[in-house]
Amino acid sequence: MKYNRILLKLSGEALMGEQQYGIDAVRLMQYAEEIKAVAATGTQVAVVIGGGNIFRGVQAAAFGLDRVQGDYMGMLATVINSMALQSALEKLDVSTRLLSGLTIQQVCEPYLRRRAMRHLEKGRVVIFGAGIGSPYFTTDSAASLRAIEIEADVVLKGTRVDGIYTADPEKDPTAVRYPEITFEEVMAKNLNVMDMTAFTLCKENNLPIIVFDMNKTGNLQRLLEGDTVGTLVTMEGPSPVQNKEDSALQSTL
Image (tube, rainbow, N blue to C red; front, side, top):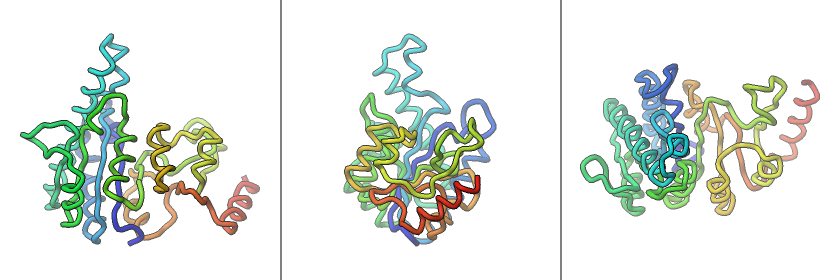
């Protein structure tokens, strides 16, 4: 496989499936099966999942709540999603550990870097819940930080879009997807990949990011086998050969 250790970032909203809120059992099991297939190859898998299908900290202001309180509520929402994913994986006989940035002894282990790495080395899927345990930080930031701490080879951001585009492909049908792009280009073009704190952490630690469509069955496996799936963000960017191919592609559009 192309990568030995990965950090998979999933959005909470994706767990809704076709529902308006909550967790869709079909989508949850689809993700669990995708992760199981990858873990079975020997790739070490860590996962961070958001909580937007239940509650987002930034919603607190709309309710007149304190932002800090709202962020802690959002962290608890990620723990609920993490527990659901853990349960789905264990239903498929995948050895899993849930580590939390908040101390919740009854349902998950407290996060310790060495413990997380040991679990990964033993072939267990490790799920990081409750973000980094502090308000004002998103789960994107948690994903970047945990990936750096566990020395992951790449951050895989699973979304409903198959990569990074020149514009929002759901609004602009002429938008073109980048097969590869540099950190500098993403920042210069103000492309929405992650929040700036998370993105800067990856850039400063030379940690590649791949944005891809997690909802398409088999994409995660194909990506790890070396197929061109989604958009790769690196310090170097595409090769000269790739640049020529991109120019040829855009000239035909």
